[in-house]
Amino acid sequence: MDAWRVEVSVRAGLPDPAGEAARSALIGAGLSIPGSVRSRRGFLLGQELTADAVEQFASSVLADPITDEFVVHAPGATAPAEAGRVTIRPRPGVTDQVARSV
Image (cartoon, rainbow, N blue to C red; front, side, top):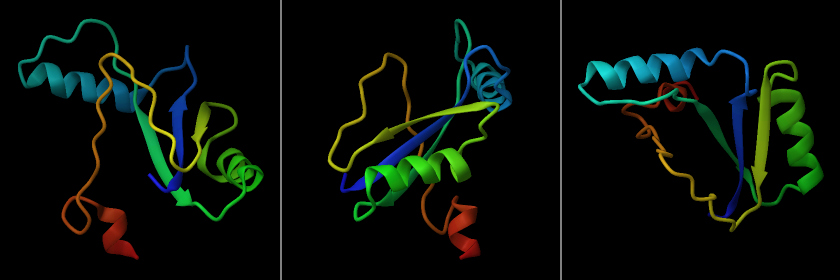
């Protein structure tokens, strides 16, 4: 992907309400979910930005410095493979409420 990708998640050891809600929904749908579910918020930033600008923006705007941690992936990098990782992307204008607001 030709954009900087920033993934923000709740620090390990802290409660993850979105992850807990997702786990409850999955169990409610009849799936067997061993262990916990952790959530991440993903952001795409323009490839013309510098690595320093992306790091600064992520640490000062996208992530809460107390409760969150973040990982930055450079343009063109692929997401690392993780067992059990699922990516859900809203459809613009259908399930993406932010897209409707701009």
